[in-house]
Image (cartoon, rainbow, N blue to C red; front, side, top):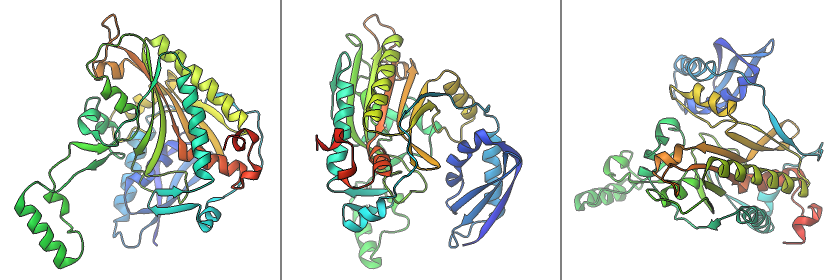
Length: 394
């Protein structure tokens, strides 16, 4: 595969390197791998490996990388990460259990970013969700729901999701409801023995999409309603985000499971609930003998003129924290996030308080497959070596 060295027009401070790394694979579908090059403490270039069959113009790809740097990275103000919790657990060794689990048949790779698993991971998954669910239901005015998978695109449209995160959504469609369309499709499929390249020209419905997270179901549920008082809603369900490239593991999946907790009511109630869940989550991590930390973070805004401002605002106001667990000696993954929204979703969905004003909200989300992956990376795949807190309940 051909390689291209992109010399950045302007160096990127090391503190902004993670923001650049989040976006590289979304620059072009021709990028197979990349590595940042550094000089004197800043990122000065990107070494790209391109798919040999992509036929991409390397100069065009280089120009796009520099455009992302100029428009989305450099306008951000470098801020040192603020850590709000660090586990007292220390760990020097980590395990890459995934190949062994696949060989054993415990894990099944169904496709790109799609993984299934059997025991003992089913029981581990259920245990972790049970503990997180208990944290949610211990909050005042908490209730649990189960939502359908499909989400109306109009829900995401209400608050401009597509303008901030165009890289994530996946739309659900079908053939246009017409006899001639059906007949033409069947004739072509029978003759060519494959789906036609222009398939989506024959599709018309874009009223539904796959949910990128679970909390949007909750805001949709209470759209246009006046709440009787402060409320907590929790749900577990499938979420879907296109990530451009997937690790062959449980770490980053196209099709994954979230345990979500949503807070709606006064600003004080939302903040208190978030802080309570954070503290209980930290205690759970320590009980499970997991090393990690929690720090101020930001959402992955993309291709938006307000990207830098939104990221800075989130970080300065500490609206988002991420729970980071190491999976190797030099790399951690986010397994949970703790967020405050102000009145944004109350205004967007016309959800009001008993007094008639727009509600404030917050949410906490845990990626269950990611949490399982971090647990296995730290404790290994043999249940005999897992903490007693886990095995005695499995």
